[in-house]
Image (spheres, rainbow, N blue to C red):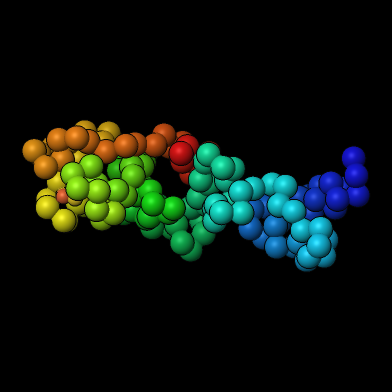
Length: 148
Ligand code: FES
């Protein structure tokens, strides 16, 4: 194990993770050797390139602790659909490609022309008949993982 990894492991052992780990690690390493080894720098949630990790205790995501609320992260609409379930779909509507999909009254909805979709992405009216791309979600402790 090289010196860089030892430093990373040490910071991890302090309980740091995600963006804060990256920030501390970069500061400790010096800019020239600042390489993000733990996450995709384009992913603000700290997940890997094909997942989003949302800490439901973080201010940005606490809304998801309440049924009926949603957040939009990296073009994905993530909703709390019941006490035990979440749903995640693309923000881009299948009707005419407007990036306007939201969660409203228990279903996904695009205000551009009124397309409606259920929590599985299935169209509920003619405008929404092409459905929406969905993403798998899973909750581990207070971290919601969305596989993209
Ligand atoms: S683009 Fe969403 S309803 Fe038309």
